[in-house]
Image 1: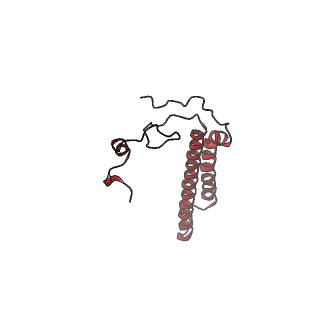
Image 2: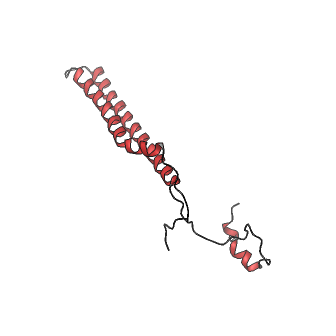
Image 3: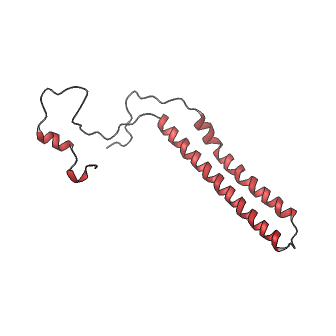
Length: 130
């Protein structure tokens, strides 16, 4: 069975923003991670090593804020990357899906289907949606 059988004469759609964005995602992830870390480094350079408890608490809070910003940014980059992949797949060539017989079609049958044929298309009673 060929899992990647293309539909004959299927066309790909023109590429758009998704490829430009896909190529920039590593740079966006790197810059979006480096900037908060750079700001945190500047905060540490600007503070005194022998600080009181309130300033130490504030520095620890800044660590958490920068960590949250980085995690949020990387999750957004991953979300945009997943969106780009979905758009790329949807714009690609069409593939043949699993074929199966259905009880209806665009063209009427020459003869009525038998009860056995009709029952072979239906789900068993215990698998039918309620």
